[in-house]
Length: 230
Image 1 (spheres, one colour):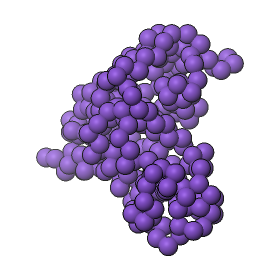
Image 2 (cartoon, helix red, strand yellow):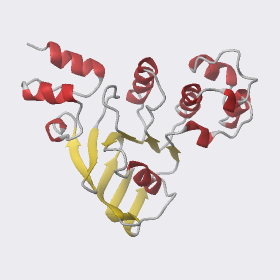
Image 3 (cartoon, helix red, strand yellow):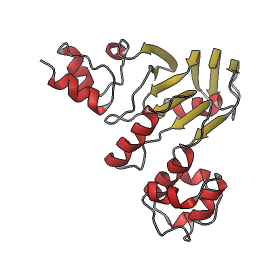
Image 4 (tube, helix red, strand yellow):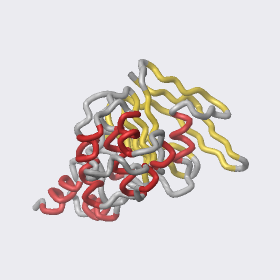
């Protein structure tokens, strides 16, 4: 399966974004500054909007899920239990996983945004989607939850996962790097060979590369291994 962008151009007033390339099976990280067009591109890849020019082809993709930055956009159940069931899931294990034990009967909107984000991801991640698009999935999560979530993403072995983020500290194991720069989606290549070309790389990774100790991937463990390498 693959997601192919052919001479795609997205426009909004005077703003525009050009994109071309193919997303293959694996985990893709797309970085870019705030306002660079990550969310707009995510919606176009999911088919929610249409490009002003070019074509987006979903070849062999039978199931698709787009997760927005703000989890309240996804709520369809009045209570937390009902929200779990709306995903065809048993509430009890979901509540344990999202650290919401005993709160299944309260309104979904009584949760803080961080709690609602944990609930949303706990409902989302069990799904086996051919194409999973995550727009700023790390927002509203503390460091521990980011690491746990990254571990689940790293263990996915099916389909195409595309993560749009400006995160600078905690990442899942990543197969391919992309970034939006100067109004263009740029494919940097496979990890780790693409890391020296990554303009939005965290300073720690830039420092390691400059010292000749390029990490094998961008997870916390890979960065620590490279930092301790002699």
